[in-house]
Length: 318
Picture 1 (cartoon, one colour):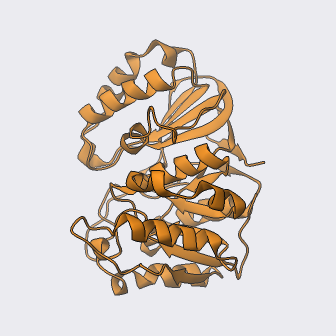
Picture 2 (cartoon, helix red, strand yellow; picture 1 turned 90 degrees about the vertical axis):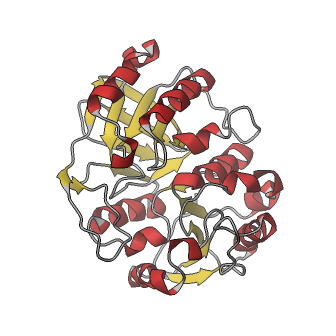
């Protein structure tokens, strides 16, 4: 398994939304500076400044940038600019043989679920769901976020532990106020689980159901979260679909919901109560996963091991 070290080269690409969609190149340079301060070299894809009617770039340009990043022997890791909503457009056009022949770290979050999962399903290469490039310009909560990411990309095994505090504010807006709350990972059903990590952003993962890009694994732990754009009613039906496609999880880990979802603890518990399988497996919720801040990094395709009596998830990559 590839591991990053100081001096390594990170290529930033935009498989989904463009840099212009989130303020432009100059507005995000503090993320580049943060990565360079950690000791990495940073470059950008050939079509990085392309921006179309959909806040993205053409399929051809996005595919070419991913292929170029994998084929370039000087590139050690690939980092998505941000999420978005259309990276699943790329999946039929990616050269999975090329990717398998040049395995390297690739990381993103949210809509990145589509290509991260497809790459794992088609090649067996483990991928990373964690901070995007733009995530590194966040200030409050960044220490936890960066530490978790570094553990994931530099070690064969690592532990996920709760952050000290969390927020659901617009951290990317320079003058937006931020409110933090104490973090508490919560238990819906107790137990111990071990299995292969699959999942990610629930709405994006659902786009893969029934396709060749959905992973087929025996013993799996589902990691799921939802973005600001999906009301809790959307989560309800996507979650039911998930358990129909993957009906026998060994465990379930649910990320905190952004405030825009209007999810309450009462509603979430009522949703979980609908599904008998969840009374038989360990289930954690309100964890530091994806669309609230800060977020931890998981390795899709790695083994996860957790006991609900401990606030810790152990991840073994090899």
